[in-house]
Image (cartoon, rainbow, N blue to C red; front, side, top):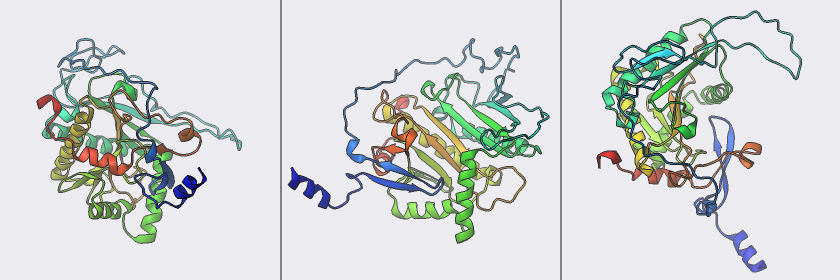
Length: 357
């Protein structure tokens, strides 16, 4: 037994076999990678997979065109993208009188903001991977319009565009849609990202993500998709099993700086990435996805570089998801399968949607 331990201690490091930590420069955090655990048996919770075919229009859906929402308002008979203010928003527009009487341990302040819902199309069953690229581009157009409109409000300092897809991600309605939360403060994760982007920019005079993308293209280990204007990759520091990022090749601080052709390129790479996700386990693949871009606080932000995160929870099948519990909650994020293994798997998945095969 002692000889075996000595042999193990003296073996050469192999990142495909040995536990190690990886650095995330966006958040200034480390994650633990434990590839030796990837094949451990699973007897824990499994997710119910529903292969239910959804109709193009559901008369009971609050998001479908022409239907009455829960607050009594009737949706117009819209075609294409439809935006409305969330009937159950997490933020409120109204300004309140506030006396700032804080102590060291009980600091709080009011938060103003606007919550909106973006229905991707009138079709209740049509998710992003099944939409035409031109129709996804219309969604990107609306993201751009909303970022500009909301960001121009004096009290809005951050516009968060995101999508929760699938009930396992807490999505309360199957009609394909995203959300916008625009608020008076810059949220904590964005502040952390901004500080690290700014530190890198001030030290190097270049964008952290611009330099990172160049290195990833050179190494070509974690690239999944690439077109003229964007790259989709599994980050070196990815936490979730099939986590990905879409990053613009050109340093653009926000979505307003994209041309029509760049917006179409973004739509195409979103479509192709989400097709790969669906094909991985031949299901409508759940994820939380969202855009990180410069705040709308009226200050210059040359450090920012547009990118979009995808955080899918599924681990080894449609039934088994990764949990962030225990060590992850108390110490630091941890993953089993390496980012390089995830990238290789996704890279080899077909771009023809499984429903059309």
